[in-house]
Image (cartoon, rainbow, N blue to C red; front, side):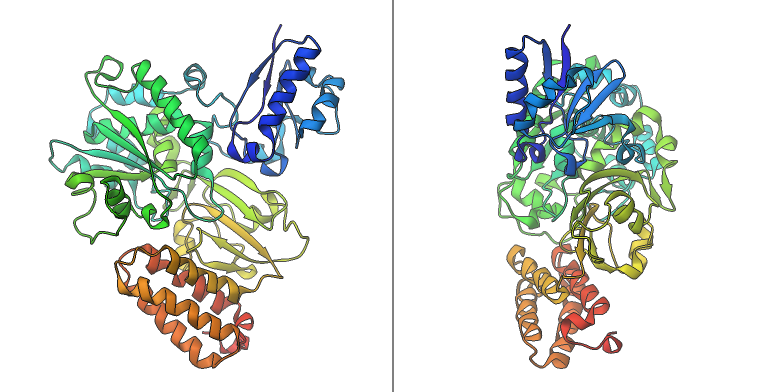
Length: 516
């Protein structure tokens, strides 16, 4: 009887040796005459334990990690194929506290199934949402998404149902669905994990979106730095076409939807929806003036839904279990769950999916385990390189869009990067300005010139030159960026800069009482 062994194919696990471990397990099994089935699953998100190997036993899947190729022989000697005890034993995977305390809706299959096995996907509730959507009228699909309270998980947190409703009610002979998979924020990897670990859920979500608004063509705009996601998506798309889940006649319904992956070229600004569409049209990625909104005149001038990976991957469970089911998770106007990515100076980095409402402190210490260095956590940047820095006094803030907005902060894409008390926050503020200057598309003056002038000012401040005068100039410059930039790249650069200055003035050579 063959025993199933799971070794992640996630690129984070591969970077830590997962491919070598898979080869070593296959070799050891052959040498010992043992029958195994080797499945390359996605990552469970416990990155400090990667590569994490699992074995299917009568009691359930047993986990071992972090495993290196040199550990494989001793694992076999300890009879790990039957759940034997070993120094790397973690126990039953599903019993791990890190997983038990989560609410996995979007990531329900990631780490459990073979990502490119359609049979696995179907066996774990895959395509139930699409099967329901096929028999529904368009307005009812949109209503289910609206009722769920789903908001864009890419940063702006705009209600998904409202966006879809606009596209539905804008007459056009052609409409498009665009998945923004240009995940470029520092410390974020949830999009990548979905595309590598459960690509069918994204394809299903895009297909449901197409049926909802009358779009027949979808594009996944994928960052070029994600080759493993590219391979997994194309494999899943091919299988979906072959099985009738994509094409001109989806499951015999007479309704059409086609999906194609397009690669970006490494420009951060193309994560902004209008720049992305310019790039898809074969032009330079420059931000467009709005209005008109993409929902009215988007790709090639046609009504277009632009959502990010997590937004679209959250749609299948809504159509499967209903909008009310999804809405019952969360707090206030932040409904459902959010995949949060823990990075930086933390003991337990990785991905968790929880309902909105958990405090930042519980996230950092309950899941993250505190700083990896053992020193106090001084600051946390939430929401990517343009997110605000939060001091320890704000760690009890609940993870909620409005609660963060009240602090002049953003949840964004759910990236969380922690820093201990050795960090120089003035240097981090300078990095924010430099990042904007490097990544600016150059179309608007505040972003193109302001960011460059900003890091020049930061250099002077850090050298102790005319600190009071230069900080006034820096604040004035941030006001111009905030109110005069065409898109969020320039408009949000003041968030990390001013939050660092306001909460950590001593790092800028300013006495705390002088901060405003």
